[in-house]
Length: 296
Image (cartoon, rainbow, N blue to C red):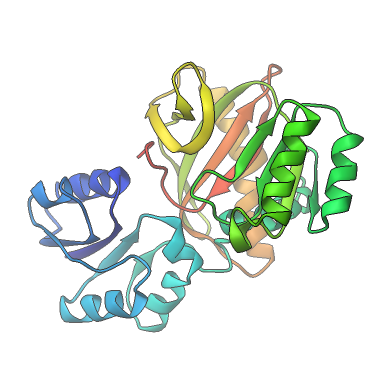
């Protein structure tokens, strides 16, 4: 089997390392890869951008690729899975429509509410004045989120109303995140323990992977702005079998079933970023439609 892995981070190195261990795999191409993937057996890095879908399709054709694994979110948002499927190549990942769980926080929050999946109370805004009024009338802290992809930097936890106003102005008026910030979510701040819960999905069946906890803040002592991830550990001892079953029943299964009802079956890795409340109830902070980095 020839495998193509798309991406250039630690996540893609971990995937390459694991895939190379399979006796069924003859050759691995990583586009574009990194210095780590270059050291793995059976592996060749190829200087093709993850967003160059035409170039990746050409590579898949030339090298007789049997399976493609997508690491980052940007090519998913660009519709790489749809393009590969239309060209007749096997690829593991969600379609552009299904990937809206990650690529549009507004879509995700409305989906969660529609299907009764536990999450923080929220409101969505395009209008600056309406967003500022909401800030003045709701309890602190507040969480301000750019709806679109912002490389893990589009979530601001505002301890004061002034901080919330600054975040809203940066997104809606100053266009700090461009199109990604043209629509925003403002939600209540949830207290508890964060948990990364990742599953593999084939459209109907779900296979849970080990729980993990990542650390997003840039600076020591849980300080500084959020990043895409500074580090992680796995497994999480507080994720008991009982809690795992609760997450599956209350969140994961309902999500997959909800997408199926909307004629958007989900295939790929699904990463639920959760807050476990002091009462032991899991609530969705966000969904990612791929493996985590650094959790992988």
